[in-house]
Structure formats: structure tokens, C-alpha cells
Image (tube, rainbow, N blue to C red; front, side, top):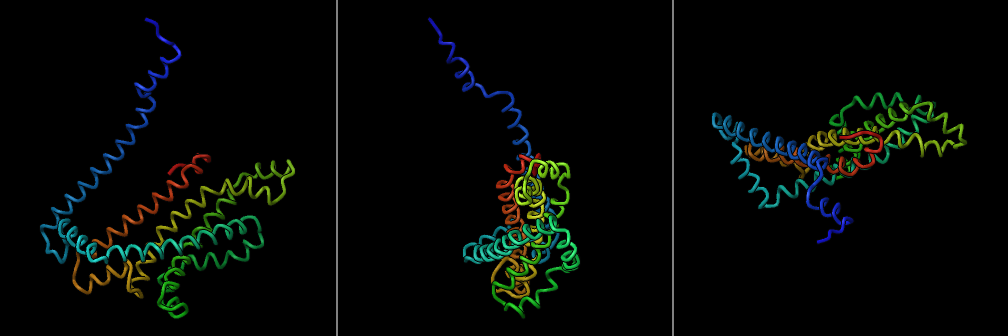
Length: 276
């Protein structure tokens, strides 16, 4: 009986996964298992504590689940999630699109940085909730005012992180590019921009978190839909379990958005030795 030696490695490779693959899969399974265990323990602790209080003060996980089912059936939860998501993504995307070029220009043009720095340093310390009234007066109680507040909370964070990335570019790389005859535009595209990508992603993730803080405040003050409006309505009807549903929905939605952002940018960030 003869055996074709050329097919042996291929058959063995299909039959047994390599040790490197097994080592990579085990930490991933461990992380997932620990995360699931942590959630289960947290729900169990929540259930134990809720037994000592009234449902108005601290609803149990089961009561909260029943409230979520009720809100899903009548469409309130889905409409609230959709409204908040649209406002957050629109304002956040506009803030990133504007903030990145502004940060790049401030980093590359010293006189522009000196002119814009007082405004950046001033407005980044003024919380968006302070502009809710002005946003409603200037833009009305519709969608524009909410999107503008999300844009406001995003653009400064992204611009500052992009600026930090530009200023942290190694001077030797810039000199090398100029020595090789690269134009300023070519240097910006091939040297400055790639080195700034990790800072841009960090700024975008931080801005996403702040966007969730802002949208709740804006929807509580002036909105008929959205998760912030749902939480405020639940307060008026003394439905504490609805408040918990709104809070949990915000956390899950933020986790989902951040996971998508990390998944989309992880491949490009891996080139620069950065992982999230």
C-alpha cells in the first residue's frame, strides 16, 4: 500500500488544529465566559437586593423584564431606540467629519492653532446641557436642536485628540519626508494622517460616550420620543421599571455602537500597534 506524501501534511492540517490556533481560542472563550458569569452574578445580586425594597424603589429583574416586554409590544421601546440612535449617529458623524480636519489644520498651521485655541479651550469646558435652552430657541424643539447638541459635544473632543496626534508625530519622520522631496500635502497624507489615526479613533470613541450623556438631557427637556423622553415619562407615571429599561437600553446601545466602531477600525489600528 502506497501513500502519497504530498497529501499527508494537508490531511494532517485538516484533521488537527494547530497549537497556536488552540491557544488563541482559549483566551477568547475565557473572556466570553467571564463576561457572561459577571452578568449572571450581577443580575442575581440585583434580584437579592430588590427583595428588600418596594417595586417603586427598586424593581426586580423579572419586573423590569416584564416592563421591557410591555414596551416592546406597544412599539414604544423600538421607536425610542430608533429616535435616539438617529440623533446620536447624525450629530456624532457630523462632529467627526468637521473635527478631524479642524484638528489637522490646527496641528499643521501654527497661527491657526493660536487663533482657535482660546475658543477650543473655552467651549470644551461648557457642558452641552447649558446650551439646551439656546438650542431650542435658535433651532426649535425639533430634531435640529438635538443633533446640534450632539455635534457640539463631539467636535471639540475629536478636534483636540486629532491635534494631539498631529503634534505627537515624530519630527524625524517629517524631516525624512521633506528630504525625500515630499510636498506638504504629500507629507500630510503619507506621514501625518496615518500617525494620527489612533488619536482620531480614541477621540471618536470618547465623543460617542459623551453623545449618550447629551442626548438624554436634551430629550428630557424637549422631546416627545427617545430614550431620555421614555425615562422622563416613566417618572411621571411612577413606572420605575420603565426607567430601568431605558437605562439598560442606553447601556446596550452604547456598547453596540462602540463595538461596531472598534470592529471597523481595528484592522487599520493594528497596523500602528494599537489594540482596543
